[in-house]
Image (cartoon, rainbow, N blue to C red):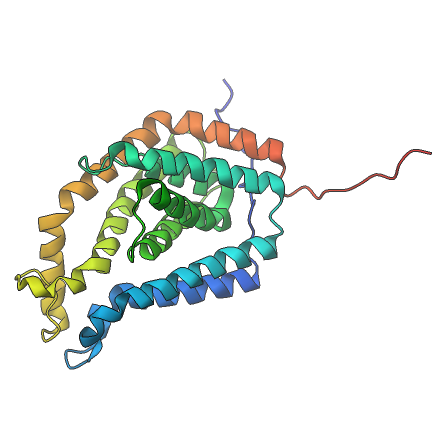
Length: 279
């Protein structure tokens, strides 16, 4: 009996992260990390909370950096028309999948497609795909707002992480599906948790015992944040994680096979040459 996947298949590199792209990605990740985690980085005496109304400007700056990293990645890698077409098809599919379960217990089938695409096409393509898909879905659903740059960055990280999982050239079949399902489960919770950080610091006006308190210590705010996540998003994140696992295990083999066949036919890494005309 032959194996379901050939052991010599290499992970595609439709977008390669060169030095300039890596530097831009590191910059946007550092800024995004600071914007996400500032409630736990700033001391209680900090005046950052007094500038909460300036948050939309920070989000806008983050969006500019996201666009810059995507542009740098594409320009440095020499993204060809076949890779652009692949990016467009997958981003459009992901954007169309997102509204299917919107508002229903975290049923978001887009996440499993991002995991499998990042796995097959690599971390560079994965980051670009995640950010572009979230941008397209925001336009499609009317979800454009100050939270959108954070969604783009978090989804870029989520999809890129799938491309960084070990064993892309050797791990195939059920072990690979189990690895992807486990990653999707954990990453779905991580995505929901980190996105909670985008809005949690700005709900202090509610005077709730789970709201951010700029005068409290870091451990106290951490306890408040965990209580906030348990009270508001645990069920949603669990639904997203379970849907991602189920779709990965049941549809994963067919989707992985289709993606790998498409990348082999596209031959992203094959240089384009032009033969001299016959005389």
